[in-house]
Image 1 (tube, rainbow, N blue to C red):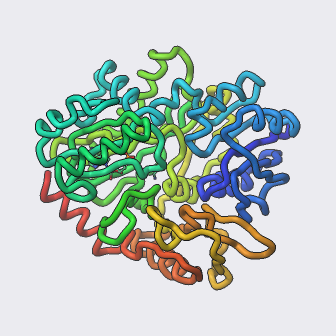
Image 2 (image 1 turned 135 degrees about the horizontal axis):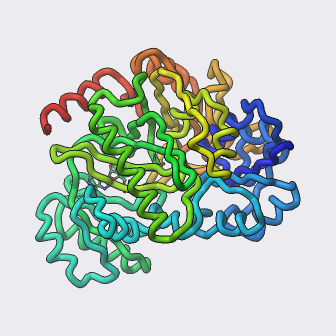
Length: 437
Ligand code: AMP
Ligand code: GLY
């Protein structure tokens, strides 16, 4: 039987998902609902419509209309709204957890409470607030090293770190006040020092299959300066580890992902089907958890899906039928680098509506469109991360050289981080880890 697959979302992550599905040897048709017209996605799908992906009724109607039997939810917002629950009720198999389970990402306070009750003690000291009562005292307790996080979804931009974005307790109090004024809860936690990495796992609720580890770069500007972003670029190494990590670090991260799925299953009695993404920090005190996400990372998905050898549709079907234990998942033993080109002003005040030109890029198969729109034949910046380019190579350095050359050929009012994946940056990461451990 042919599978009719609906992909929800229209950024670079979804472009990568669709490109991987398109390579499947199994009979299938691809449909997509997105929020803006991504020309890369449009080219690969049987039908691509623009609509409100957070409106479950709208998505369900479309899925039924097209006889879809599989849905893949890319971004976190539809998960938070319970789109997976609604699709399962219609007998459509979903890659992406139900609303309760997705709280591991959508509520930072839920995630911390869950970890506490299931003895997953790898998170920083924290406290949740919904008023200013006790905020100053807690900041005093933490001293100079603290982080303030909006307790909800902020596209990676709601986090402010002491010494970088908040230079004093008064600064922190002002930010907390703003969050309260906007009706939000927030978390204050201990600032961790070390190197970040992401470990994503496929989960069918019982079995987890892990992907290569990736390092993202959250800060907007070179040398990790500037505000937090959705992620400016990533790299992974040929041995599926990272140059500053050891085997034990990876084993702990894998074990932690397994423990989280077990905790979620015990808590709700239902199976987590989709991708679990652990955001970790290697510190002097071992591996700590920064956050969990309930979906593929963006840009991390570009790295891992570029390396994936196994048929991605086969993996999705095994997740849905709870047969992940039956298949072997293979990734190429190559390094990858991915860099985003983003609009001038991103993330605080991005320009929008300007034309970009990709005609000088050599390999369009390695280019993934993100926040763009198509007007007539022009590709227009839509305000968030515009497009990314990924390359694989025998070494990180080799992949970086290809990506840097290609991304520099994209024309328009954009910028990217030239330092991601370069030798000096990687060496400084290794030195940093050697110094603190
Ligand atoms: P999050 O949205 O929680 O992933 O946070 C975005 C970024 O803020 C992370 O990738 C880190 O760079 C930084 N960050 C978040 N929490 C902490 C922490 N407890 N200590 C140090 N940096 C953090
Ligand atoms: N790479 C960060 C994220 O996907 O949240």
